[in-house]
Image (cartoon, rainbow, N blue to C red):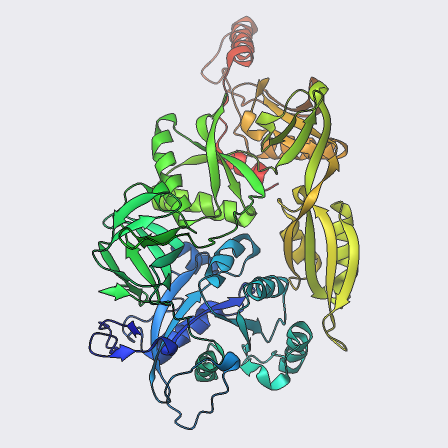
Length: 634
C-alpha cells in the first residue's frame, strides 16, 4: 500500500485516504526537439487540476529562462498529478495481467518531461530508468525524426511500454496518414493503437491519460524490502542544501529518517521529503514505487551523485541499485575566468552545475596565457553553449572559452598510449607514432529531394556512406541515411549547414562507434608574435591551411586596431602557413601645428615612427571575448 499525503493544491492524497500501489503510474514523454512535449505536459497539468489557472503559464515545467527563450527543454522535470477516471464504462485490457485498480478511482500519475535534443539524451536515459512507460510523441507536420528513433531505442532497452501519439493534428499541413505509416514502420504496431492529439487545443489529451492507466503497469510491490531509492536528478538549493530527485524502488523513506548514500558512503538525514506539483510539496513519506524529492541537508555537492542509491542507515540494503552508465563526453573546451581572482567562484559554479547536469565532466587546467581554469567535457556544441550561458546568467561570471576539440588517442614512440583532450596536451610531433580519432554513427532523416545535397555535405566532411532506408512512400517520401563520420566534423557548424542544404527539413542523431587512425597536427595562432594559447587547435594535416586561413581572417575582422601594425599568424611547428596584417591606427600628429617649415613637421613624424617601432617590440594586445567567440563560431 502506498500512502499519499494531503495535497495542498486540493488533491485528497493522504493520511485521509489510502491509495493502492496499483493506482500509481510512472511515465515520461519522449520526442524529437520541438514536437510539443512541454505543451502536452501543460495540458496534462490543466486537465488534472495540478496547477491552478492563476498559476498556469506556457511551458510551466521549463523553469529556466534559457528554455523559454530558445523553446527547448534542457532539464528533465518530474511532476505528480492526480487523475480520476470519468468514464465508468471504460474497458481495461491491461497487459501482463497487472491490476489496474478500481474503475472511477483516483490515480497518481508521475510524469517526467524530457529534453529532445541529442546533446541532452543523458537526461532522457535517466528519466527512462525511473518509469515503467513512455509516451512517444511525433509531430504530424514533421513525422518521425532522428531523435525520435534514438529516444525510442533508449526506451526499448529499458523494456518500457510505448504509447505512440501523433501531435499537432490541428495544423493545416498535418499529414496524419503518412505519420501513422512511419510509426507503424518503426514500431510494428497496429493503426488503431496510435493516439491522435493536439497539445495546443487539448483535443485527445484525456485519451492519452486513460491509455497510460490502461497500458503502463504499476510499480512492482517491494514495500517490505529494505529501503532503496534511485537518485535520477539533483540540484543545489541555497536554503535546503542538496535536493535529490528520487524514485523509491524498495520500501519507503520518511521525514527524519537517517539515510546512507551507498556509492559515496555518505550518511545524512532526511530534513524534508515530498513530491513535485511542480513546486516542492512536503509529505510525511514516499512509499514504494513513488517519485519525489529528498532534502539531504548536504552542503558538499560531490556527496550526492546522480545514479547513487539512498538506503536507510538503520535497515540497510545489501547492494546498491544498478545506477546509470557513465556518459562519455565528446567535445572538450577550456573554461577560464576572465579575471584571475574569480577562479574559486568558477570552481564552485561548475560544481553546482555538475550537480544539475550529470553529463558534464571537468578537471583543473593551467594555461600559460589564461591562468587557472578547467578542461570541461560536453556531449555536443549546444551543451557547451548552454553551459557557458548558465555560468554567465546564474553565477554572473565572465569567462573565456578555448577552441573546442575532441578526445584523441595517441601512441607514442615508446609504446605508451595516451588520451589528449586539447591542443595543450599534444606532445612534440617527433614523439608521436600514431594518432586515433573518434568515429560516430550518424543518422540523418531528410525528404528524398534533398538526399543529393546531404550526401555532398557529408562527403566534404570526410563521412563514409553506409546505407539508406525509406520511411514512407509516394509524394513527400523521406529517407533515413546511415553514415560513419569523424566527430571533429560534427562539432562546429555541421548542424547549421545540414539545415541550410535541406531548407530546414533534416534532423540528425549520432552515437560513438570506435577510434580509427588519423593524421592530426597542432595549429598555433600568433598575434603580435605572441602565441594565443586559447586559440590553438588540433586539425587534420590536409585541412590545416584552410583552417588557419579562416582563423586569421576572423581575427583580422574582430580584433580592435592598435597604435601599431598587428601581425596575425597561423603556424604548425615553426612553419607559418597563413598570415594577415591589421594596419595601425593613424594619429595625425601634425594637426596641432598651425604653421612652420617642413623640418618641424618631419621631426614630429620621425618621433611618431620611433614610437611605433617601440610599440611593435613591446606592445601587448588584449584580445576581447568577442574575438574568441568569433573564432569558435567560424
